[in-house]
Image (cartoon, rainbow over all chains, first blue to last red; front, side, top):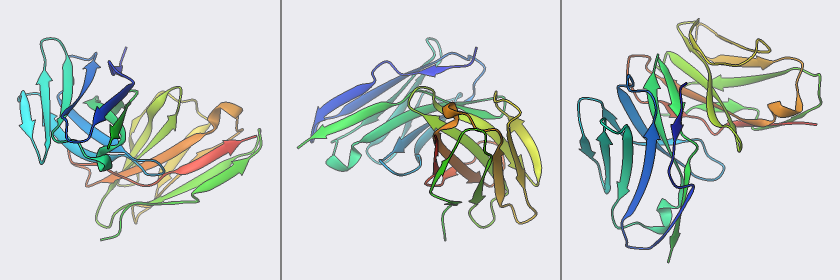
Length: 110
Length: 113
């Protein structure tokens, strides 16, 4: 079936540390992946994306890694800040549809 | 430019009723997608409309339907509401080309009593 799952439902980090959020996807035919951030009371917000012909992509303080061999996706946040506290979702695009993971809640301790 | 807007933001209905939710995409965006978000099932794709035509559909019963107007605004309708339909319904708009970024609205919180 189609499913995208996350290894850790919650993650607590100290302010200034790096955060790593992991995601497993099941459809090897998926060719586009996105990370979203959702704050309380808001809709998901695009963070970064990556296509299947890449294995790494960097943005501002964020890096996404894609390992197609094991169907694994990760989001790295450098120097995590209190404003990074939110739920993070990975999503894969397959058959024209976005399939989301369950989400990981990131909590940043000051 | 204005973001995606959804109305109403909150809605309370009773079982058996029907409901219509509205979404206004970002100006110039031709694709509107709808998602249901619940604590148990997470974010699930409902359907996508592009140029007034349904382009993709998720695995939801026929009680869930939608449409898109010529100005790209979209509505979704849920008939014969069930308790399990209580959720946050999110709308996202995009230009409509492959792999372009989707911009989400704040959602409509539907509670079915």
